[in-house]
Length: 344
Image (cartoon, rainbow, N blue to C red):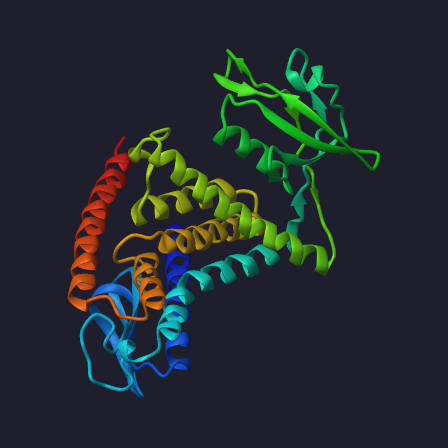
């Protein structure tokens, strides 16, 4: 059951991404030859109008195959025949739909359980928070230049900037104060601590506050993804910590197992939280300016918009082909690493 749930979550998120491309292509008058869920051989499909809708063997991935997207076509409904801004909107729609999905799922989550307010429950003796005079009930609103809306952002900021001094802005009795804190290494845990503690109590709001916090929730996962990528590029985390479809499905399954004893509501909440993370993550990853990804295609389209002249299709195609080969090689390595972890 857990693996079926994991595959459904993964598939729905990818399908929604491709739906963004599909709807904007239709709106722009571009013919979509095939709209599919999954990869590999076709299990079944149906022709409806100009589009063939199909389900493939492997439930990971999907595609919106447009006329003339990757090859020359003289058809007036071809991707390449449309204006550069129409093509930009079609390519950008996939990641944008992922962010839209993350926002709506966040609204459901927050409406159900509220948000973890950035209120500290106390300070630890001997740490800089106590020295700076911070107290129970203080509300953290900023860490350096980053605005804080949830308490988990405090923890994640400390993780991404481990050991670095931080200027904290907090509120007390309606007044704002600042404190310059320097993390101290805790020998027992091996972590750098500011000395802040929290009971992570959740607070429910009304529809309007939930909508606002849903934006913050989506932004939180986008920020977390970008910071994680930064740590990967700078070598602060190992590539072995990357997960592909196999690892993601396993993690969702493990989360399901851990929460099912608490009841169906907690299973629903945890699966919802995971879906928000994955949707925002997929949106960010696809916007990276790498060949073969939506972000890489957007780079060529923006160059075209500035130059008012198309990049040589053969050169662009070669760049994307090389990018696809590299991405496929990376996916094989990640999948191998995921499978290896199953037996460790």
